Amino acid sequence: MKIKRDAADDEIPTSSMADIAFLLIIYFMVTTTFTATRGLDFALPEDDDSPPVVEKEDSVLIEILPSGEYVVDQQPMQLSGIIDYLKPKLDANPKKPVIIRPDPQSQYKSMVTVLDELRQATEKGIKEEIRISIPTQREIESFWY
Amino acid sequence: MKLAASKKHEPAIPTASMADIAFLLIIFFMLTITFEVDKTQVKLPKTNIRIEIPKKAAYVAIDSTGRIKVSSGEDLSASVPSADEVHSFAVGVIAQNPQKDFVLKADGGVSYGDVDLVMDALKRAKVRTIYLLSEQVTVDDI
Image (spheres, helix red, strand yellow):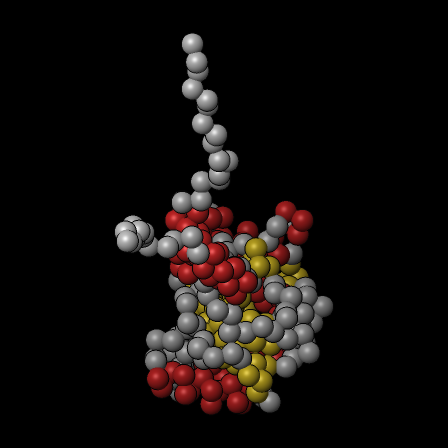
């Protein structure tokens, strides 16, 4: 009797490969979150017990009132006017520090808005990056005079 | 003359390259994936300058009610009762990696006093850089 033998199938079965791949895609698509992963960077000064004493007269003080209004060197000012006010002072002394002092009752976003404005100074005609300092309440109580 | 009967073609969609396309997409998603360590719902402040935050940065989140959550960047964020706890948390993180960056994810409407306490806690823990998480300013905001 003649036995009929099937030719051996020597192919790798790849038909389910796409199914597996799409399953993995769905997993990664579901778990990926395109959230905000950007922000303003702010380098903190070294916290030592004797920070460099900044003479009040040598710096520019930006106060933020609880209402969200800005007071620069005792003068009420609009956000857009701050850079124009700082420009002549910083042209004369580019190392002049700018201190942001928000009221504890003010909103956090007011501080971020001012910080963002000051960080854009080089795009608005100021030659060097502004030296920005945001002292915390503890530092103000310890070192402010 | 007798014409040969035309061969019947089986209609088929070519699927051989399907797997290649799928794997390409997988590679894209694998490279772009970042697992969110903090799921606190906040309304972020808006800024023009937005710098890419380094991966694996530690998170401190403050929601609109002033509740604080922390994450070392590896695990999901956990609530802490006060800003003092943020200090001890930050000291622990900095002890392991002095170069570690911190992200402050605070609601724009939260009072600055709450943020001030957290910033002070991070300063005392000798954190080098904090990133204030923000959203892009859009034309509608101007």
